Image (cartoon, rainbow, N blue to C red; front, side):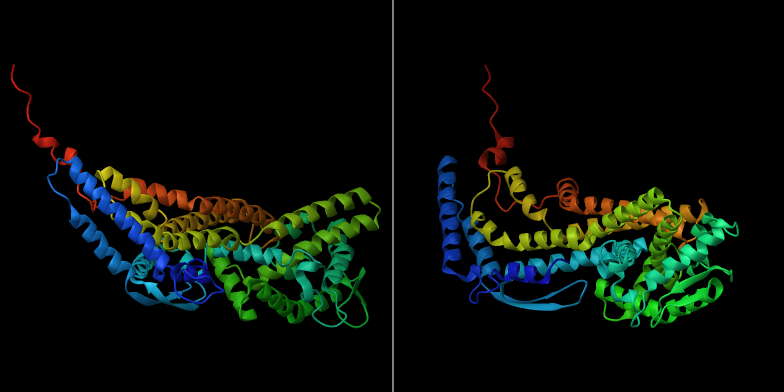
Length: 469
């Protein structure tokens, strides 16, 4: 679930720019293991002396040598598959021990996480990524914040300026409807369809549209017909292409499917993806149209206040990064690499005789606790929490507050929910290693020790009773 290249380098023990033998096949590593075995033999000898010469447990060193020879002698070819992209990286000359442990750990952990997600009936983290629906809606929102975010979608045809056209229409027609009492701001904010939220049927005022070629001065009703047709035919496909590049998808149609999947998971069935994406762009057009109206009638302070609030909100959204890219995947990459990187360093301590079960327990859990399979299970539960929490809030938003998605007012509310839950998900994801360690130390029984208990523990039940007085 982490980075494919990092996992491959961790398995092979090679520098990405060097060719040659892995570290476990070098003479230095064999010398390190030899030092460990020498210390183990000396400790076994001293232990035999301290136990009164009852015997020397050379079998402990023999078992350690057999384990070392089995785990780090033969090598295998390992195929590492990215859980999200499906890319495969083949690594040769991987020691059999880390290869077998990694294969078992990955398959069992991944399988358990899949079972969890089937039982949860929420969008699978192992298929789409951590909190993917939330991040998808965040990406759409960021991709429509401003003229810069829209990019080429703002001018789908030569000479067109879709943002300027909508701003003029809002200032000249939509808000004029509000001024004469035909509509209220609340009606505009609660309308769930972009084709009716900003529409004006008046034929008296005129507005200027810049849809390619020479600017057109049209009455409000005719201007909306031209603007609506241009939005459907030209602007929406250009917006899909822009979002496709930002989301790194293979085709514009994949954007619609991805956004529809996210809306179904968070807001429930019935919210159209095309309507949602166009409406997110309408938010910026409406805000700038309000600023232009204040400027036209000389309300400079209100215009400055409105524009500053929009700029602060846009700056906050622009600072947001993809949660999976910023926190979760780097963390998973580090711990997946760590479990394989530290494996060779643990083997020199294998021949050392333990004094009790407690000593063995103190040595094993730190290695066991970085198991990335447990991290995946924890992330699956966190993913479930995020989806259940935001889906519950969206249900209350629609059924209690009577806001229909994707009305402009509901999108304002959704902005706060996405920011809050993505921040919460980032905090919980960063705590996943600690949660895994807690689960290991409290819920998983320790395996039986390789080394027998020392003589004091083994013979504690056979001590002689004190002589009678």
